[in-house]
Length: 621
Image 1: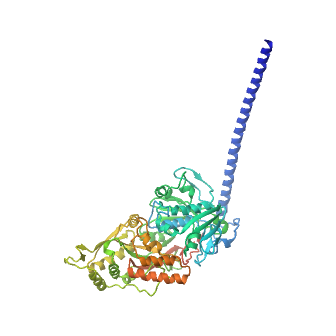
Image 2: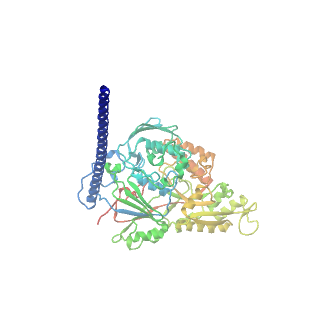
Image 3: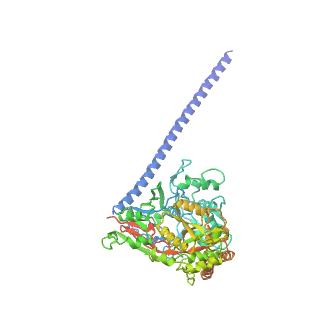
């Protein structure tokens, strides 16, 4: 009995000891956990303090530079391995705001699915490619994100190495609320760019056409990948070295397979621009302005290609004369002008060479204007009728009285001064008599005496669509309308707002319109003229539905011809064919006319970029 009591006592004592030990251990672990959490928080606070200190050092450095105080120099890496370094002034002051204007706005800033030049321009400010053309000698490619590249002898494989430490812009995801900081650009971002473009659900047919022969991107590691092409294509250098990273962490911020349709409709993310370039989109004030600020973590800082201007502001100002008045009141710093403004409104005191604060610059243009005839409209299916329509466009008169002789009449889709343009082709002359003769042979006569040509009971009547904000288009359309009236063609002018205009073009819901293209350095007519693009339902550059088997053959030959002289001969044949078909009435190549405030320094013109803002700086006085 006593032994049992003793045993029970011992067992109870042991249990008390064990329980007490467990409680002690639990309390110890709990104290350790709290200590660890506190330490982690302290470490995080220390990290934040270090980051703030780094930011303050950078801000102090640039503030010192701005105030003409000698700041600690940034260590410049190998300038031979970066594009256009020689055009940047390393001693120029940092700071200031450059204000310019745009005549249109859009809520969709995703340039893959929004085929507008202004959106493309904004992306160019915010992103960087593997390489880019040299400003002065555009036939030469120089690295940006790429550290090096190797091209196989058959021009079908490119081995790319990219720089380490290239960072995406910091941002907060508008859907998830997740904050992204110091996210590095990797090979995966270049693969994602190509995968998105090649996804058939993504609404970018005008870009996808150039990537048809790109087979795949093979990722070797975070900073190295290979690009494989299926077919030879003379623009593979440009297409490969022009690849940009695309922010997968923004556009595929969900589990599962990438959804192309969701990408098209993602209004919140498509209202943003996230890149790795010298500027980031800081603010969009709807209907008023777009504000871009310098990205202080831009990798180009270490290579001496960091822009000096800290902020770019694009004010939305639809009326050209309002924009000009803003320049004269110094509310804007840089502005493109039309010919009327250049000739008649730049003789005031603001432009005086000695005492004025505005300067004028004129340079050869690369953009051409044209009248597009929708070939789905039965009125314009006959090339003879289209030729008659061109006979009714008095381009000599328009050149003199609308463009003030500050342009050149063009006959085709290539740069006039390039080896691809056939200068032996003369413009179709203005002739009401020839137009009437052609139209009569095509069966168009005024059979009921109402002053309008008719055929098979249908009047020759169409609507000419123009952009309501364009004074130049208004003037041109009125001139053409009057000359059309003289032969019995009823032309209705429809001025509409730009976004509606583009929507109708994309849906091919128009009769005729006037627009412009910017010719590329080495032209490929495929996107605009190949038959395969004519039946694309939306966002096709071949929005007039032009189809021609001979043109297709020439385009396909052009794409695989690397010898520039042979390719030039093929382009000239294509030029002659297009001139014969007249799917466009080719109009003008306007001179590039712009003005700027003298406080802007290093304003230069180059063959492909008239005034790159990255190399400018603002004079402090």
